[in-house]
Length: 133
Image 1 (tube, rainbow, N blue to C red):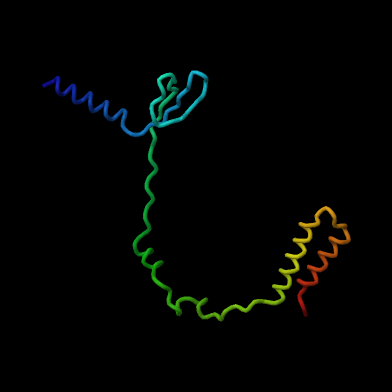
Image 2: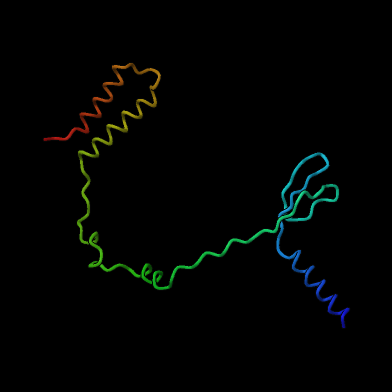
């Protein structure tokens, strides 16, 4: 009876010691180092082996929050739903167009523009973006 108990306890200890994945550092004879989850090659030496801990699984969101987010919003609940469609602002569009054109010209002629020409580009953008009134 004591032999069976001894064998069972040895198997239990041996089973828990090597269970789970391990990360191993293997050093080849030429000095090359590799990190792997498999045993090292026959000609390589194992520098160390560490057990790998799995990350905890993410906690799912509560069911009530998921149900609320999947529900379509009623028109009364959303103030943005009552707003009229935004009209494009011609002054802003003109300003953005002037900036785009000036940037394109600077990118294209970056090494050929004089200080005066660069200043003129900036002045065009300033005129297009100036507030009226």
